[in-house]
Image (cartoon, one colour):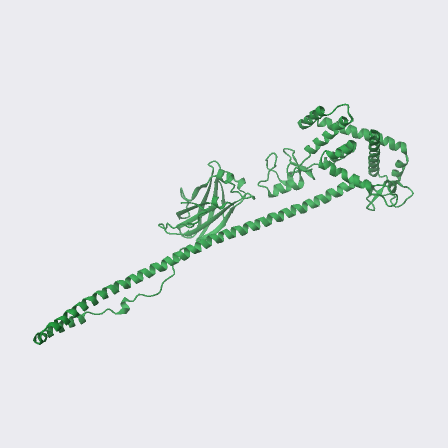
Length: 528
């Protein structure tokens, strides 16, 4: 069994040496005729086989010496020494296998934790990443910095790892020496060994041999006979490449294209998430405006009730006075009738002048004209000042320096004044403050409600202030200590895109106005 494995290994090395000689021939300008001459000499083939095996072993040995100082490699080798017999055939393959394992660990992207694809490194810490991974990190991440050393990093500063192809060739040579055991080292090694196996199973239709070369001139896969047959003019003076190398190159290009499509898809997904979040914010503003509308309707109803009460009270006062006069007249009438009924004829004649005078005195009192008493039945709709409601998104919050200030877009209130919100970050004092600035218009009292939005409505922070605002900021004005920076980070108020979402609710008010803008919302933590 050992002899068969050695024969297969030498055969594989011979094919590798033949491929190497063909590549060298193409570099020097030779064609398929020189390949034919090389293939026809069995002694040259055996010599090339021996030279190739020696070269690969020398390359692996020198590479092992380079990584001998690596702590991970030393640990692997110490474990291998305790578990394997140095005199067994398996132990002779152990250094190569552990060397491959070390290479897989070293040449691994620390963002996706997969095999490096188009590797680029940071010019400061020399950490390597896949180009698409570091591109996405710098474009969509919280800040433009290296994931390893955390220093500022831009895409144009990355350094392409041009010697990575040599490392891949070294891996393939070591896997060919390791035989079937190399497939169990890692998923990457298995994937790289698979194309060679598939290529060996594909046969040439003309010669029935395994397809092992790719003709770059006619863009066909051919066997060794097609490439070296001097009598066949089909591929004369053509340029050939090893099939597995061409396959890997094409697959790498396709994987890169698919990766770009995946990156494009991820960007679309992020755009969809932003649209959905925008819809949610619009719904939140609508809910606040509906609550405000209910408050406006309730305030208008209270205004109608007040007007009705005032007018009805005036009419009731007039009615009460007139009713009192009617009661007094009724009493006098009853007294005079009683006297008339109980008096003799002679007495009645004598009382006539008195009764007539009394009746004249009663009628002499002027009756008020109803148009002077009448109260207009019209009622006016009294609406309170309308709130200006919106969302202020503070972008790139993690990049804020101490005392950094950002402004919202300008907006107007119901009376035409122009305002803007200023967000202030005091890192040294651990606070995040909010201020309202009057940009244009006359000074006035304003009622301002600010909410720091959280995914959990119970954690949404809401604070309301009433201040007299003019164009000159004063000490203690606004909400300097709206929330601490540690609370923002620890309680996860930051969105995935490194932004804060603030809802503002602002309207003019009176100095004695005590009605809260968002009273009745049990999900808010309201502070005055």
